[in-house]
Image 1 (tube, one colour):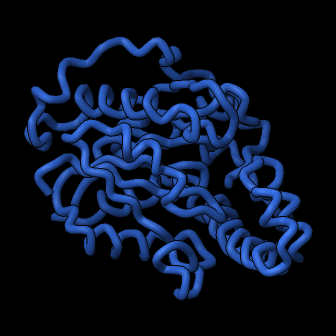
Image 2 (cartoon, helix red, strand yellow; image 1 turned 30 degrees about the horizontal axis):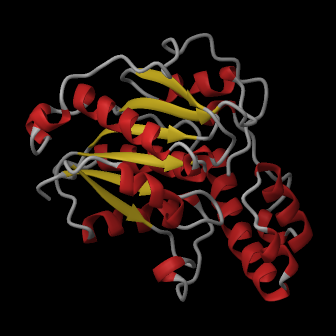
Image 3 (cartoon, helix red, strand yellow; image 1 turned 90 degrees about the vertical axis):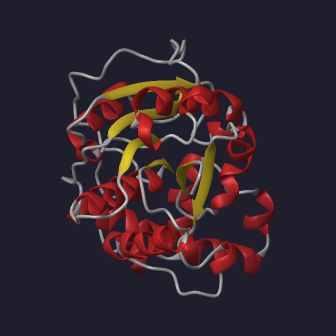
Length: 274
């Protein structure tokens, strides 16, 4: 790829469509690479995966299929933040693989501050329980809940994705990456500063927090601001040799949305990984 790849990983129950505004707002030197898990979008006929390990295996294969062979960045929203962390770490474990320079971890608590969403197996939860958990974060359109077929499909997909999230928390929460971390979150989202700060325990490199106006799906209204943050951070943190044209990105500038460097994480309050 001649432009700098930005891999986009969606939330649970979602598709790459959640990034449509961000894709339009990104500068030309950044190449959006939206990846979708099976069971949705263009892969709606494929059976969903149920574990984080299987999800990351699938994403690694999709990354290779997309032609990403050098350095790249990841923007993972909610569930996608955890999968992005696992994908970055997986790529680091094998010589010769494309490496993640910056992980934009969006709308989720640091893994070590999170607990599973379900006490038992999410795959055994009924539709009502699955949709109730999903409803904590909004994003379920009324027309979906009112239409029986759409409701069943939404519950099926959410159930599979919640199983992925819970398996990550139970088996991969200690994953650590060498990538820089930029933790993004809406000011009205459910996650506390302490939960967001705990992301610093998942990276051997720098970590910072950036808040945007809005809730769990702040991306819908803040695409331009997020795109500016992404471009600024990549210009500052990515390997200059990997940027197609570093001059296009310009010098790094202070971001008024940026908050102090992360410290003092308190993992006592459980995060909600969706």
